[in-house]
Length: 316
Image 1 (cartoon, rainbow, N blue to C red):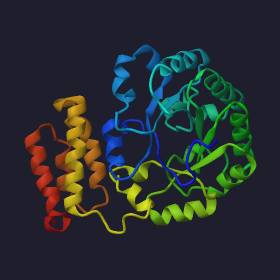
Image 2 (cartoon, one colour; image 1 turned 90 degrees about the vertical axis):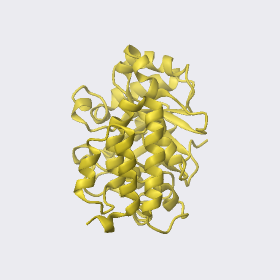
Image 3 (spheres, rainbow, N blue to C red; image 1 turned 180 degrees about the horizontal axis):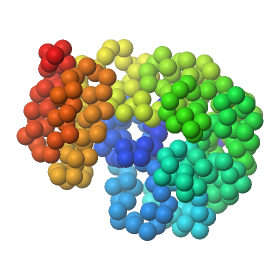
């Protein structure tokens, strides 16, 4: 039985972003399948209280996955045991994060290069988790599907019930083309459901990626940053650009939910990067973006909202 509908568009786990307010912004525009932020098993088992905001599931969330990153089997076992006490739909294992602070400890994309250990981690999780276990990783070679296919087969044999494959190798991080042909080759060879990931930022890029990677579920990540309307567009329900009024309303709702969730002082600080994502590529002047870096209380937030509603054309 497949984890996802064939036409699913899934919100990726984004470290530092996909908390409850962020997911709710995306859900307002059609997102159904979403993940928590990536959570390190070491920090989870040693500082559970500090993770409470990352672990929270809203009563209005019909589907929520949790993603763990790590490579130590003992720590993974403890983390899975704790996750079993919570309410999630699936447990995903991260084998694709390219951040040096992750890979230098043998986690994320580095773990994918150790196929045997990666298999042992997934096998342990699949054996102990009360939720279905999935895995997310990157292609291992841009031309030869063999290395990626060997990893996929090992994870499938280890109990992964879905495989999400990012179409870039780890050293490319988020730059350059996504190699959907490698994902397509894996789809043709494994029985486990395959989710294609990488580079989807609008309807045109979705259609091009699916044409190369093959039909099936797709995961979006950076394309949804500052653009929760992406889910409407990919579903064919939006054919026009976001208006200044729509932008103002969504930024206000999103930021106030962050403030309610974390408290005013921390909430406004955390919202700065969120607002900058909303402004990116929309033509607003640098001076307005610079003002976001000083956002710390409601009065200057109200001023910012008024400026957003004017639209970028009046601010040049």
